[in-house]
Image 1 (cartoon, rainbow, N blue to C red):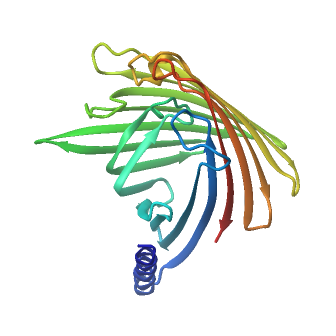
Image 2 (cartoon, one colour; image 1 turned 90 degrees about the vertical axis):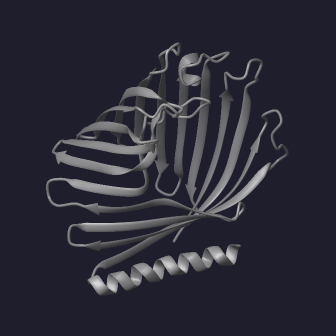
Length: 304
């Protein structure tokens, strides 16, 4: 199976290489190999010093010609022997805007605010993304749809970003008419990030408004503190996420609110190799009687 994945990667690179030669386009490649082991104290899950291990390989091939750009990013999960495409798109970017087509699916999420059921988002379906920079603002729009019988159900997401003097203000609004989607309804949120020399602070707030009758609106927030210790000493980060019962259950109240405290230390071993250690304490809020638990991860990343 692993040999088959390598053959697929070679074929993808060859196709782009041949296409680039024909079109006299520029080709760039990049990639990462991620070696990691994880553990958890959650009931019923793998335990011990290292509960599970995995190796992920991402390799991105990008072709550019004038205002056009095409990209394929296959991802290999060596533990699961699975090949997926982390990204695949073609983009047209003249001076005033960019239009991106993603045939494998495009979506939009509510920043970093999530509960046990994940983040509010529009479903990932084939669609288009638009971005218009009007300095110091950037506006973006995502539109996709899925066929349901003879009808098409559309999803959309709109974002705005304002950036000036190290401060970034963002807003997002999204919604889906796809009734089968977990986050059927709409969501909105705001984010602020401030970079102060070695310190970066982030704060986010968001709300989910379900469309299904009988479900309740929910909200949550996210905060992050990140500090660069100095040249060659690495970076430390601390995050906190809290969402209410309704948000945690995508409109259906869970037994308790969800919260997560996350800490991370990243250290550059070389210019191309980094070590990351992280630990998190999670209060899942569901099912009833579930206890809080701890997760930890050791990861070595190699840039190609």
